[in-house]
Every structure is written in structure tokens, then in C-alpha cells.
Amino acid sequence: MFDLNRAIDTWHRGLESDELRRGETLDELESHVREEVERFVKSGLHQEQAFERAVSRIGQSKDLAREFAKVGREKPSLREYLNGDVLALKVRRWTPRLVIGTGFLFIGFSGLTGWLGTTAWMLARLTDRDHAPFWQALASRSTESSFFLIPTLIGLTVGLILLWENKDRARLLIRSLAASFILMPAYITIGTIAIFLTLTLANGTPKQLDVVQSVVSPNGAYEAYVRNGVALDGPNHRLYIRRVKDRHFMLIEPLRKGIDACRGIWWSPDSEMVVFLSHFYIIAVQVPGYNTVRIPLPETVDSIQTGKAGALQDFPPVSVEFPRPGVFQYRLGETGGGATVDLACVLGDTRSRAS
Amino acid sequence: MTISKDLVAASSTPIILSILAQGENYGYAIIQEVRRLSDERIHWSDGMLYPVLHRLENQELVRSRWITPESGRKRKYYRLTPKGARRLKSAQSQWRLVHATLARLWEEARCLI
Image 1 (cartoon, one colour):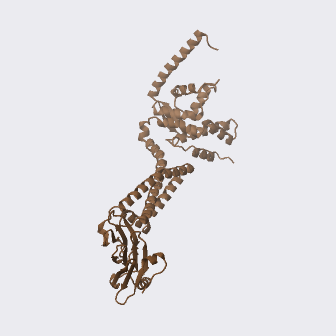
Image 2: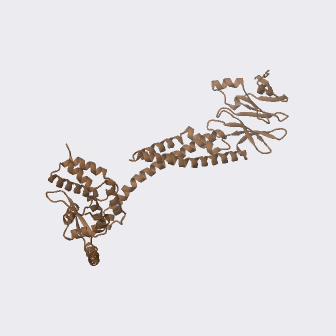
């Protein structure tokens, strides 16, 4: 059964464009349609036919909106300003745009935080804490407290919800993707510059402040040193060797954060080998070439497993000697173990002699 | 015979003002009046009238108000303002001049087909 009121409600909703919602335009159009329906019914038409004819005579929604838009572009009257019609129209016009704009802003923001987090994460693995403190700090936050992950997810979710509420989802989705693609080169460019600058600066002059131990080779060509980063729960030692003439450095080994620390550095007399000793490892490095051998210390390995290691004062005294080129000998305390290591053999993976 | 769109658009304002000069009226009745006076030969799209009325109201040539009769639905009535009356007078002069010019021209040239 045809329901005129329901049909008019449906037609009314279909006309709800900004231009037609101005003032009481829709009410006026509805009044017109009702008059027309009444006239057609009186002339013998069925109510449904009368409604369809009346609606078709008043014109398509887009045509009406276009005609009323022309009126809307004209200067509003003083009365329209005073009764709030102009303000209401502006609010109605701008609200969807604001929602869409905010949606894009959130998605852009999530892209930015996502990019920052990812860049920090990557750079933190390409550089060390001392030379890239900014990125290291960001990476630390991004992984430890979801500094970037949470805003990225929130931004993405809110942005998509705001855009999803809009009628024209497909177009907005395409626009979002386009915006991402437009922003992507900017992110990549900024990221590349950041990586380039970070690595360039990192290869320049390391800060001397963080060096906690440093021993120059007997011939003066190399310097072995230890940096201590910031860690809340203990030492954060990193072992480096630097070429003195051009200050080019090489990170040999980051020790286990908070638990391991460098105990000493010894250079061989021929300056071709340097030995670092930590709580848990003895690390020998050949220069040039930076071939590295890491030997776990049996006594302290047991301690790691039982969780008792890490206290510097508990570590027995150590002596390191170089009986002949390419060979080093270490001894732990009075009764502790020790070994003589032929570095060339270990590196060649053929044999190692221990006593 | 149908009247061209341009002529319909150009004549809509003086026609509406002229109808309202006879008294307060509402959109639907104005359309019916135009049909009657033109012997159904001037066909306005029903929706076209309202933007014109709103424009005239913006220009302060007409004023509107909602009236709900005791038995009936509410309607938006328009009436002519003094400014609208002056505009109508001016339009009458212009249209009379155009009409007289064309009539004389066609009469003298005997070019009516």
C-alpha cells in the first residue's frame, strides 16, 4: 500500500544537499509537492502516480541544487545573517570537509610516526648509540614504550573511521592511497638525508666524553677503545678500533647491555693484534682486517647461566701476554684457568692450543 | 508554441513580480497562475520557480512568511516590497519599450511570417 508520507520522507532525504537545506527550502518544496499531488488526485490519478508525476515535475535533485547554489552564491541578506542561516549553512558546508581533512591529517600523522619509528629502528641497527644518539633514543622508545607504534595505529584507525563515515568511500580511499604515494617520496627523501647525515657524522669525530677506556697501539697507528652508552640497569660497553690517521672507526662488539663490561685492553708488541677482555669473553682482533675471535670464559659462562655474574669486583685478576706474533696467552687470577691462543689457527678454524 | 529558455529566464522576474503585485501568493499558486494566463504555453519547471523567488527575496524585492490556514497545510507566502514595486515599474517600462519596438518594426517591415 502506497504511503504518501513515507514516500515524501524518502524523497526529502534524497534532496538533502547543502544548497537545499538552506533555510526552509525543503519544507517549501515539500509543500509544493503535496499541493501538486492533491491536484492530480482530484483529477483522477492514483496517489502513487500523482506523487511520481509531481516529483518529476519539480525536477531532479541535482538540477534543483544547482539552481539554489546560484542563489547561495549571491550575497546573503541581513536577515539571513541575523537569524543564523548563513552561519548554519557555512557550518554544514564545512563540517564534512573538516571531517575529511582531519581524517587525512590523522593518516598523514600515522604515516609520519610510522616512518620515524621505522627509520629509528633501522638506523639504530646501522649505527651505534654514541654516534647516533637521536635515532638510538627514538628506536629505544619505539620498541620499549611503543612511542611510535601506538600513535601510528591510533592515527590510522581514527583517520580511516573519519573517512569511512563519508558517503563517497571509494573516492576517499583512492585519495588516501594517492596521498600516501605523494607523501612517500617526501618520507623517503627525508629518511635518506637523515641516514646520510647520521652516517657521515658518525664517521667523523666520535665524542671523547663517552670513551671509558682507550689504548693506542705501540706503533701509534690504531687506537682500541671502549664506549659506554646509557643504560639504566648497568654498563653498556661497546668495543671499537679506530685508525688514528683518518679517524675511521670500526665497531668490534657491543657487549651484553647491563651485564657485561670490558675489563681491559692489550695490544701485541707488533701492533697487529688487540685483545679485549670482558666478564664473559676474551675478544682478539687482528688489524688491519678486523678479523675477530671471541672466546667465552668457562668460569663466567657458568655464572651467566646461574645469573651470578656481572659484579666487577668479583672478577679475578687477569694477565694477558703475547709470547710470539699472532699468539696471545691469558691467565685468570692465581688459580683460575687460562689459555694460549694462536689467532691464525682459530681464524683458519684448524686448531687452537690451550693449556 | 514553446518559448525559448532564454526568454523564459528573462521574463520570469517581471512575471513573478507582476503576479505578486496583485496580492500575496505562494509558489504553487504562482505557477498555476502563469499556466492559466499563458494558456498552458509557458511551462516552468516547478522547481525552477523557487530559486527565483529566493533570489528576489535576497534582493529584497519580495518578502516571505509562512502561513498555516485553519484547515490546510502551511504555505510560504510572498509579497511585493516597495523596492520590488519600483523594480516592477521599471521592468514594465522596459518590456513595453521592447514590445513596442518589435511590434513597430515587424509592422513596418511586414516581416511577420
